[in-house]
Length: 163
Image (cartoon, rainbow, N blue to C red):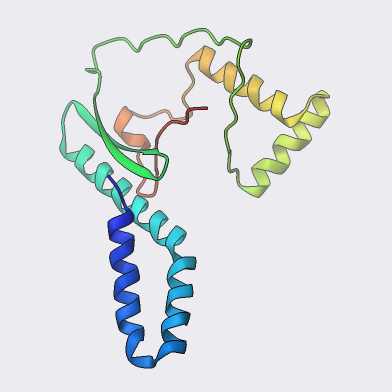
């Protein structure tokens, strides 16, 4: 789903609202529209994510996610496993081979705790995080303890990255 037409409409509406104020006000509105675009894009993605979560709660046996591919948002519908089926075992983690880069946002307090723990173990933060993620993947620990639908939040965007 291309969000650009929606953002262009917002830009046009702002320009039309500013037009009666003259050239100076129109220029200010144009600058404001340019600086607001990233925030507006995130707001639209939040709305799409909330919509996907609402749709998922209404479906039985399927889930809807919003995934980002570049600047495009796409909806992905996945079938969920029946409760009686055993959960698949995660594949073994291959620590060799190509390395991919991701951005990870942590609350400041958690970041400080990770830095202290890594320093205490004599490893870099990156090495500590790789080891922690690999351990979680190998043990199948997902970070939540409830049924699959209990980990949804109204402000979550899920997706994948490709290097």
